Length: 66
Image (cartoon, rainbow, N blue to C red; front, side, top):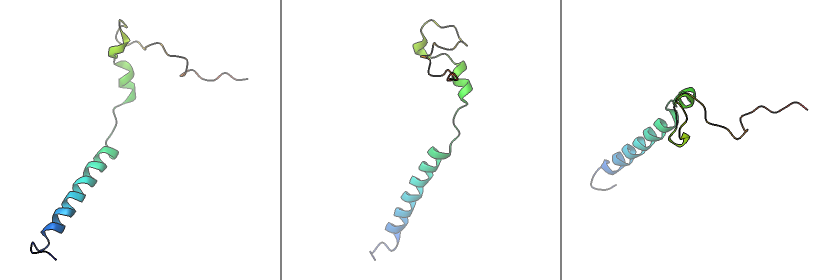
């Protein structure tokens, strides 16, 4: 081992734990409620009044029965 004792190994474990903590935070954090995103107007909506949904391209419509 080096003359620093176990200090290098301790620093390596601390860096590893910090990276795991950041990864865990990013993966386990709660996302914002999607319904709040719909109620909020977006900057690219132009003159749309608040609380209205922008026009869609038809992708959100259910499929028709054949």
